[in-house]
Amino acid sequence: MPISKTITQSALSAMTAYWQEASQNPAKAEGHLAGVGAVAALETKLKAHYGKAYALCVSNATMGLFAVAVALNLKGVEFVTTPYTYGASLAGFLWQENRPIFSELELQTLTLNPESVRQQITPNTKAILAVDILGNPCDTIALRSIADEYGLWYIADAAQSLGSYRQGMPGSKLADAVVVSFTVGKSVFAGEGGAILTDSAELYQKLVWLTQHPHRQKRDVGLCLTNEFALNARIHPLAAIIANATFEASLQQLRQEQDWYFQAIAVLNQTGLTESIEFQRDEIVPSFFRFCAAWRKEKQERELLAQLRGRGFNFQLQPLPLQFIPAQSAFQAQYAHLFPLNQDGGIETNVLAPQQLWGAQSYFCLNTTRLSKNCW
Image (tube, rainbow, N blue to C red):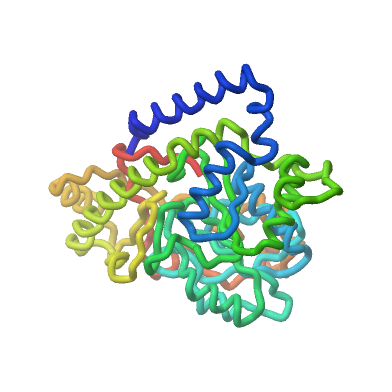
């Protein structure tokens, strides 16, 4: 749904108060360099939400994932990941010349299938990069177990899933590093920005060293030697102010959206035209960044829309967003050297595209003007 007037007013009031004080007090204007003020307050809220020991705000989720790959020294290794995500999920790992090994997906959530992840692991595998695509949380319990069994890092791109739950836990809670986003369409919108959450003091200190201003390095790590060559990846102060001021209200609004979507799912399942969505049975509460389903048999768009409208749900049907990663020309042009090629010169992979997961039946998205989540 559109951002409420209450949330908008909270953001405007917080920005105005900051600007008025910062314009008169240089120390206030410099506070974000050390990660104090709204930055620290937002990180405290994130730690409480996820139950993590450390949180670090960064410029965006893409930079956060890149920083995690660098901090964990993941370079020139294999990592198991999803073939269905926005390219930025993989970008930082690919910049490090890491080779993605694509896993099959869960039919219901389009997230990593844990048993397929297990089958893809080789002696060269060093990490699992899971993505809570469309706001559907991965099976964090199973992925944590596999990572521990094989001694792998478990990193979660939770950019789209803040406010989601699975088996009673926040989405991707058990990852070694959870990366969230505050950009357009996300559960907490601040214009831009992101954060990394972890329970590892060592990883946290490395991330501070790699991404933050020396003022914060001294404050958090207590170093005599500071790193002026760090990536300038700290969050913008206004983004931190907006996200902090609107955090609780944004998640409250999300809970209202989630209730509405679960009502829509009940109606959708009753039509018998689509594969049954069993989120409640499986204790899955998505953030519903996108809402997708799959036809049970042949497409019956008019009949489905008519039945939904008759129950008060006005949707538009659209193709499943995003393109299968290995099929993207930009991916092949830049990273084909990481893969063996097939006889046709394409990347060799045995992973099925999402549209093939239920045979001839296809996935689709249900969009509504009631909501305004249009960007990745």
